[in-house]
Every structure is written in structure tokens, then in C-alpha cells.
Length: 218
Ligand SMILES: NC(=O)c1ccc[n+]([C@@H]2O[C@H](COP(=O)([O-])OP(=O)(O)OC[C@H]3O[C@@H](n4cnc5c(N)ncnc54)[C@H](OP(=O)(O)O)[C@@H]3O)[C@@H](O)[C@H]2O)c1
Image (cartoon, rainbow, N blue to C red; front, top):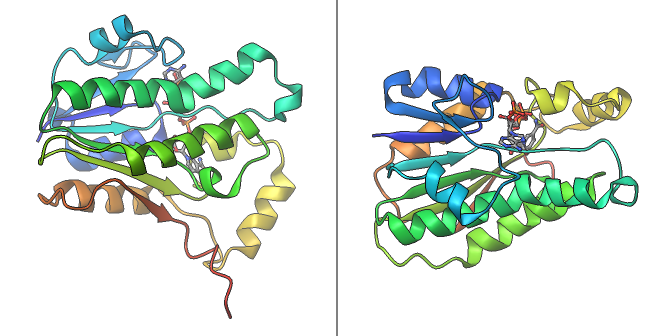
């Protein structure tokens, strides 16, 4: 299995590499540490063709950008930056990959925000775009696969540790039915389970990993 991991610097990616094996993974990111450099703000077809010049069996899109301000306080370029990183680069890359690789199995890290909304509306709408895309993008080849994995808050991640609203984060953790947030190790286990399963019948769906927090009937 050869895996392309887009979003090299995230803790989830680092833990995934440990489990999958460094020799099977090509990393993509903005820094020199990545095997292939790219910036998701550039979603031109020329950039996407360069980044995905080689074909891989598995693609894991693990990039995101969350702003600590509401959309009304974001500049036009901040809104566009969010849509580019959180949705447009990913969606356009998937289009390119699915048109050029008949064995592509694509896993995108979404978020519960795509379902429930977020303080940052640009982030919420981007993740909602991913939900719509994954459900509706018909796959032309039988061995292709397209899945959105949508976790709720991840305890040991940069996006959570960098949040300034610590009191809100603490309250959400306290009120969670599991009594804690999700950890990257758990997420890695779910991801590697699905990836190592040879079947591609599970496709065009969103797998929500939220500990049942949205169930309402008692
Ligand atoms: N943390 C949570 O509670 C949580 C909950 C649900 C879903 N998620 C999702 O989980 C995924 C990983 O996030 P994380 O929590 O691990 O946070 P993170 O460490 O901040 O990861 C975000 C990744 O996106 C990359 N990125 C940001 N802007 C980029 C750009 N312009 N071009 C290329 N790469 C860019 C970052 O690379 P740089 O180092 O270059 O910035 C980093 O690798 C995201 O899709 C996020 O939405 C997170």
C-alpha cells in the first residue's frame, strides 16, 4: 500500500505515519519536512497537477484552518483563505485524482462542524461543502472510494490546544457523553481499520466519530 498524506505537520499525521510505516507514506505540507511542498491557498490546476503528479493507492487529506473570529470580522481574503484550505483545494484535488487514478481510495478529514456549525462560519461552510461533495460525487471506477471522516473535538491536536476560549472547551469536555474528547490514537485506529479493509463498498459517506454527542432521545 502506498499512501499520500496531505497535512504532514498535524499530530494526527505523525501518529498515522508511526502506525502505517514511514516507508509506505509520502507526506505533503508547507514545510521542508514534507516530501512534497504545496500551499492549499493555491488551488490552480497547475499546482494540483504538480502536487499529484504520481498516483497513490490511498490519499488522506488532513488539512484545516480555523479562525478565532466570526465571519463578519474576517476580511474577504481571510474568508477565501478558509474556503481554499478547508474545501476548495481538497475538492479540486479529488476531482483531478478521481479523473486520473482509477484505483484511488480517498479519505478526507472533515469535522463535526460541517454538521453542527462553528463560531467560524467560513470553517463550518467549508466542512459542509465536503459533506455535500462526498455524498454526491459519483465514482466512475469500481475500485475507487471516497469517504469523509468527521471527528468531534480532538484533545491532543494543535487546533484544540491553540483555541483561546478555554472555558468553552472545558465545558464541552465536561458535558460530553464520554466524559472526554477524542484522542488522535483512537482516530488513527479507526482510520487504519478502514484503510486496511480491502473492500471499497463503503463509499460516498461520512463517518462521524463523535461519541454519540448528537443523540437526543433519552
Ligand atoms: N482539532 C480538532 O479538535 C478537530 C476536530 C475536528 C476536525 N478536525 C480536523 O482535523 C484536521 C487536522 O487538524 P488538527 O486538529 O490536527 O490541526 P493542525 O495541527 O493545525 O493541522 C492542520 C494541518 O493543515 C495544514 N495547513 C493549514 N494551512 C495550510 C495551507 N495553506 N497549505 C497546506 N497545508 C495547510 C497545516 O500545515 P502547517 O503546519 O503548514 O500550517 C497542518 O498540517 C483538520 O481537517 C481539522 O479540520 C480537527
